[in-house]
Image 1 (cartoon, rainbow, N blue to C red):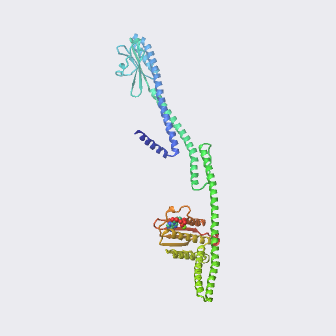
Image 2 (image 1 turned 90 degrees about the horizontal axis):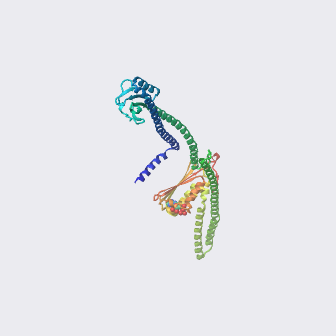
Length: 487
Ligand SMILES: Nc1ncnc2c1ncn2[C@@H]1O[C@H](COP(=O)(O)OP(=O)(O)O)[C@@H](O)[C@H]1O
Ligand SMILES: [Mg+2]
């Protein structure tokens, strides 16, 4: 029952302490520590000094009164009241602490006193002392200070009693002075403590804030900041460890970017080799195989005309049909490998043909809008865009279950934007798993050219692929192929 309450309380306190800055924590400790120390010190000193001074005052009072009692004996015995009063006045003058002195006879009558007008009512009876007593002290307050009233019997009480009152005003004054001195010392100690604390805060927090700034820049990928080592302490060690860490990070970042460069180069090489090879095979199919097949068809037709045999006629017809179909296939394969339209007529015509063929083959409605202006794009960008759109359309046919697809390719100021949008079932992000190279390949192609790909997909509501590829601006506005990935 009690434990959770205490825990809760500690948590609260820690939350408050934890929320303030180191500066306030350290300053707070110094202030609280100093104040606690001085208050304890002041109270203890007051107590012991007061005690000591009270004892001293009392023993002085006793010896004054005893002295008075001894000297008063003769005057009382001869009944010289005038001399007795002189003795009392003298006692008071010689001792500044004595505020009054008087003598009473054994019956309680006042023989002499130092009070000017009237004797305070009742004072005579408050401190009775027996004849066999050494002395008797009665302590009372006169409204301002304490008063020590000391009674000593004269001639064993037979001649009466001597009474002296001593004021504690000296004690009050001294204790007040002592307290104010302690207070002054506290202020001075506090000032020195605060200066020392401020110095400490500076020494601690400066390297820490440097560390924070440096850590922030490391978080943004800048590994250059190094921390000055201020001292050889824990913070110095931390700074050194930080510097070692950033140096290591910088080194591995360098290795990583070297590897990345190498990977890019390799990829560019692979893509360009693949593209060249495809183009070569496509040309070969187109120029040689297709030509030969055409010659074959012409030969079969000639053979057919020269020969009268109906069997040969029928067979020649068959062979011509087969050859025609093979020729179509060869054209198709050649087109898919590398459309000559891309080289000869440019990207708009190639895309138009691609979309048209795709629509025919898959029976899905597709439209394309290509605005590229008069100037042709660099060859590597044309090839990349063509391949990207080809893969995007393949994916739509394979995965989307779409009814409509639209392709948009548009040149904006310094970049070309391509969008392939379908109204199919959309893509689950989990489908972009390892081993699937289509989407990754599209992104890679765009990134190799300094561009980027964005996927927008809502399951059940189709998918859009956005590509942005910057167009390199060469001097004189002459757009040439700076990096022939397409050969
Ligand atoms: N247009 C699309 N509509 C729906 N899902 C798609 C679409 N395009 C790609 N996907 C999903 O993304 C996955 C990854 O595509 P991709 O990388 O091209 O690999 P692959 O075509 O070989 O499966 C596909 O398996 C498919 O689930
Ligand atoms: Mg695919």
